[in-house]
Length: 77
Image: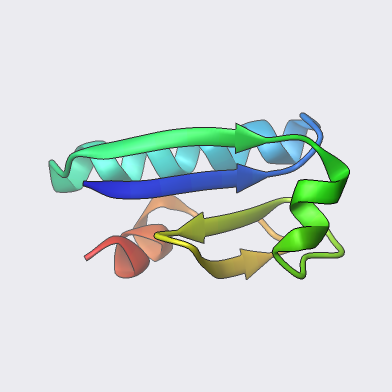
């Protein structure tokens, strides 16, 4: 199972990244657990200073932009 985390305060870009990440995971048919991290201190704990960000299995994959589902799929396989 993949652990997916969306780092952000709930802005529209954060929500879109969550949607795109879920779409990518569902397209690939993988088991995943998606959580949203909204606490600023927790976000900074990842070394992230700009949101939104995507973390896959504890590794930050993208910061400050919203990639499409096809790009996200590369990080999930």
